[in-house]
Length: 115
Image (cartoon, rainbow, N blue to C red; front, side, top):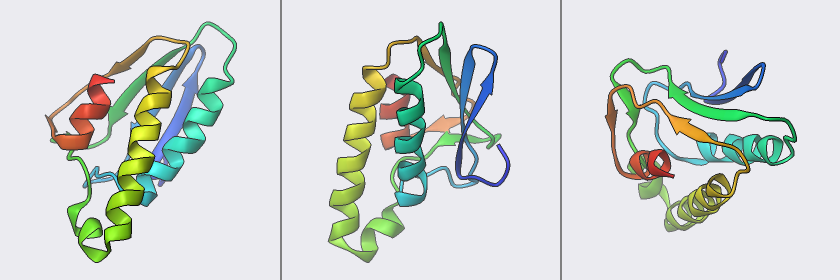
């Protein structure tokens, strides 16, 4: 996954979404790449599968970045709006999806995993 906060890796017919941050929280640095990843997945025409994993050994995802939210009310509304749009698009993907939860999973991270 390299140094990207969120990466998409293709291995034959499996698309791996990799959360690659130690704090694994939703903010603009993680939500905007998810929009780009969904753009790619929605155009996929072959028989594919999507698996989401985290590189953190203890925390799969810890939800929204509340420190980022505290900086501005705009951050709260913008990240919530982006997150809900991402989940909506994720639910509509024309392929099976799976989240491999390896550790703690809270708030928006758990909501994403359930999608």
